[in-house]
Image (tube, rainbow, N blue to C red; front, side):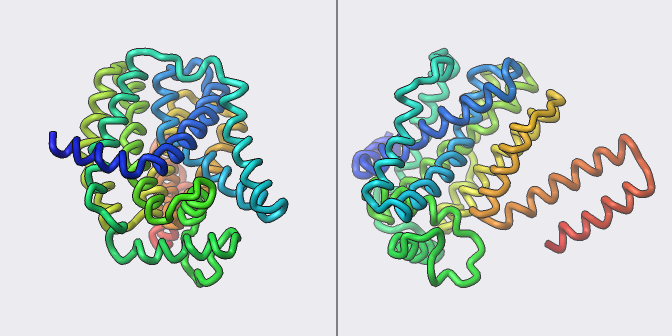
Length: 320
């Protein structure tokens, strides 16, 4: 009970920042939900779509961040923010009637997210700054992006992933919130939404909504490693992991339903690009996924050429 009260106190202290980020989260979910329904149609339930949007929302938010800075650079600060605001509210105004139909599983998922979020916020009860020395570097890069109003920090050198810093800078600038507050809150929101990516696979394989919700519950309260990423200030890695989860579930649905749709390939491509900009080492994960796919194909359709190709590609992937 003390843990929950600590979390609630932290939620109240960071309420304005949290409200802004949750607004963009719901906006991103609406767009991803709309796109998923047009790709997979009746192959997934509304609850499964909703769970996948819990990690997919970061993709349209990243695109929105690009739009915000482009608009500001071309039209000025005020006009750029007005256009970014209109872009947020258009989906809410025109409405997506088929989305977020209230059902017991969706309601349970929303309740579970709130519980996990409040419990995670307990770690912010006495937090003044984000943890570890990596956070200081992230703060510096975000501050430089805001100062230069450009797509990258001017003194970033060879720093290999600025996607997170760019999104965080956009959130801080648009909602006029302190960088430290955005770092703390954005990290906990992403961490709290991450376990919901497991819902789709469990639901598709078992056909049980209860089993899928229990998996999310167990992961939300039992996953230690993603939480440690915040303790170590690995915010880009956490955001990259979220997009990886989205891509993996997407590929699972693609394989399970034997689909061929250009929109599917386009969305996967956009997700891979954004995750690479967020953390370049996500490319290693995708390389291993590709090797696993090729090996599976090799087992089913063996040939000397395929064996050589897989071995060479595997060595290159490990070297990368």
